[in-house]
Image 1 (cartoon, one colour):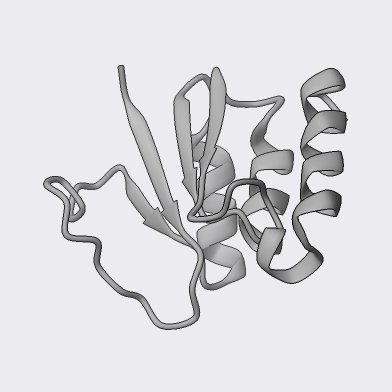
Image 2: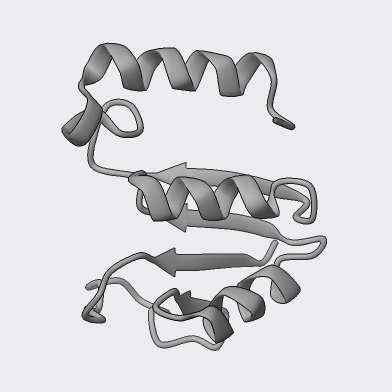
Length: 101
């Protein structure tokens, strides 16, 4: 199974995990990298690291192209730090019930 990891930050940082320097680890900082992510996601199992706006927008853009998309963040629900737990939980429930929207 192949995973592509995305890190959504302005200044690239590394994660202390084996394989972070692999060619299937992509950073999103500009439009060219966004196109590369979209192209390389087709038919793949994808892990998106980051559950704020850019990470979730990216996941929404590739969900119909990738084999599967899993989002990983530090919060209990997406957007929790910026919108609060209740709003993040409501968005998550909508996405689970209607994953292709």
